[in-house]
Image 1 (cartoon, helix red, strand yellow):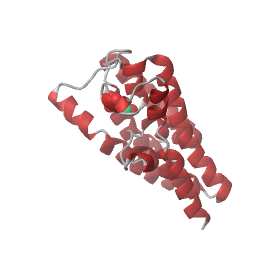
Image 2: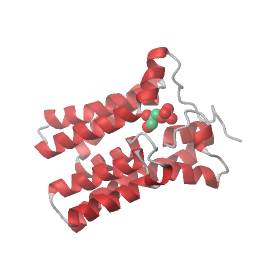
Image 3: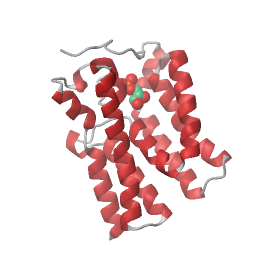
Image 4: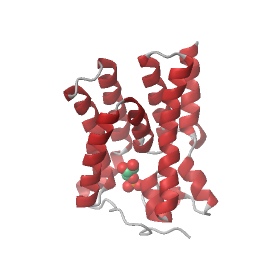
Length: 199
Ligand code: G3P
């Protein structure tokens, strides 16, 4: 029963569309501008650095909340991962957006930052290098997501963590399908503040 509560609550928390809400506060619907995604990257393109920072932070906190719910209500290693993955699922397939949503990067980062800080440092470093050299956040996110289970395996993390890493990476890659197609066609959007400013 406690597991069900962890999964349901974490999914509902993950479903909160922070990017959309912060955008609405600024009079912008992120789904109509730039990549039309509700994440921090598109918030940066459309609204600039500060709104993007708040979208990133609040989305990451949803992942942290999922893990803490697992710890609080069950307390086993698996329950922490269940809370984290349910929060990511909520973000990517939101209850409040007709099961549409974001890409799962910031929420996933929140999960791994609490569970495996060493892996987080490695993937965040690589993500930053790719963003600064290519200006393609989507490319950086997909590569970083794939590196999560690989780093967990190399560093000898628990098997549960490794399997979580594979599922989390799949969640991120699946939601980047359109970005991957644009990258292959050479028309993916590069990152630049205000490049697709809203009204
Ligand atoms: O975290 C999302 C990022 O990888 C891509 O965002 O807006 O370019 O689709 P966007």
